[in-house]
Image (cartoon, rainbow, N blue to C red; front, side, top):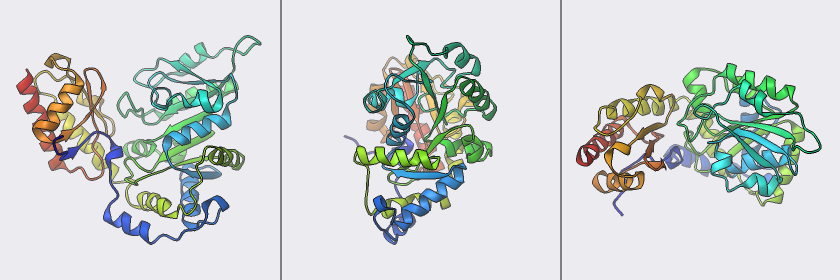
Length: 349
C-alpha cells in the first residue's frame, strides 16, 4: 500500500503531541476503580464542570459512553428515539439491543437533525400493546451528515416535547466542542437540556483514547456498575486521563483551525470537474462531496487518491467522499490535498 502522507480519513487520526506525551508520562496515578487516581478524578471534575453536571466517569471510548448511558436509562422493550443516520444506530453493532435490551427507533431528520413536530408525531402515549419511548438521543455535531451543528433553540424545542411525553434526554457529544468553538455557545448551555452527555477526547482534542460521560451522581453510580459489568475498569488510568486534561487545557480553541481548513478544502475543490459540493454546508471540521459524475465509486476514488498522492479520505457512501482536517493537518496539507483531488478528478473526467 502506498504511504499515507496526508490523512483526512477522520479526526480520530490525530496523534498526541510531544507536549501531551510528556504530560502523560509525568501524571500521578492510582487505582481509578477505588477512586484513588488523582489525575482521573481531576479530569472527571473538569468535564463535569465544563458541562454543568454533578458527576462524570472516564471511559475507554465514546461508543462505551453511549451504550452505558442507554443501559442505565432504558430497560427491556424500551424505545430510543434518534436520527436514522446516528452513530449508535449505524456504527455501534446494535449495542443497545444487546446491553439494554432496548430498541433504537429511527426518525428521518434533515441531515441528522429532527424537529419538535416530528417528535410529537412519532411519540405516542404508551399502552399495554406499545413499547415506551424512554429516551431521546441526538448527536452534536451530526456525524454521517457532515459535522452540522444542532441549533440551541431547536434542541430546546425538541426537549420540551420529549419532556412532555416523559422521555429522558441523552447527547452523543463526540464533537460537541466543535459546536462550542464554532458558535461561541457554552458547552454547559448545549448540555443543559440533557440528562446525560459525553465528550470525546480522541477526536479534535487529540488525545489517544477516551471519552467522559456526565450526569447526576446517581446516574454515574449506575454507570460505574455497567463499566464494571462490561470490563471497563482501567486501574492506573491517570496516564490516559492526563491526555484529556492536557487536551482540555490546550486544544479546544485550536479546533477553529480545523474548521477553517475544512472550509478551505471545500472551496478549493468546488470547481473540480465531476465533484459536487456546496462549501456553504461546511459548518465545522467535515467536508463531504459527491463523485457520481466521475464514473467510479468511493472505494476506487479513495484507492487512486492514495496511490497518486498519499492522501487518504473516507467513503461513507457509494459515491460519497468525506475528508476531516484535524490536529496535525496544516494549511499546506490542505492545499496539497486539494490539488491531488483536482488532479484525480481531471484524470477521471
